[in-house]
Length: 193
Image 1 (tube, helix red, strand yellow):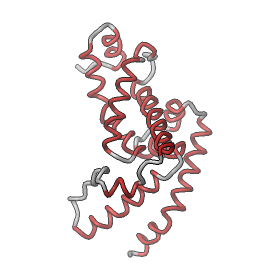
Image 2 (image 1 turned 180 degrees about the horizontal axis):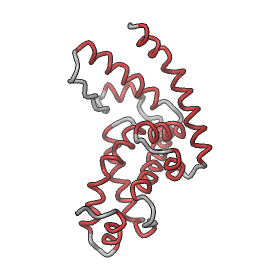
Image 3 (image 1 turned 30 degrees about the vertical axis):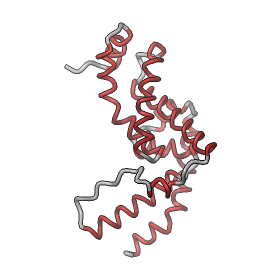
Image 4 (image 1 turned 45 degrees about the vertical axis):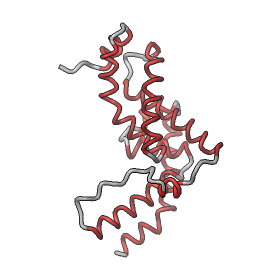
């Protein structure tokens, strides 16, 4: 029988590291997906997952055991992502184009369709990914959490320590920005080009 998160946290706090390993195995994929969508490359996302679980382990005593462990992890991970994005800006890191040329972004799985459809799908995915990556950090975070992690507005508000109205506003503005940036691509798709 699978143990709940609160039991695993209590066992970890009592010195059972295997219990924490169970939590890591249970949630590392979700944390990785969030980090990858926010940071845009696999290497940084993998590093951030490790940092997230190390931070969580160090702060485990402060975890409210009546809360969602995954939401708590998302909060740690999203804060680390935002810090890293700010650090990137400060250091003027490589552009997305250079990162793509260096192969830092994993290829999409497009084997289940024909070559022409796969090429179009891959191209559209690249354009959408670039558009999301070029959103301001506060908008990117809410878009990734809402549309790629399927989190509710309330969950996002708890993770980011924002009022729900602010989350809704950020989502509205982010969608509006994406619509504007993706309009040419969407028009191409509907015109059959």
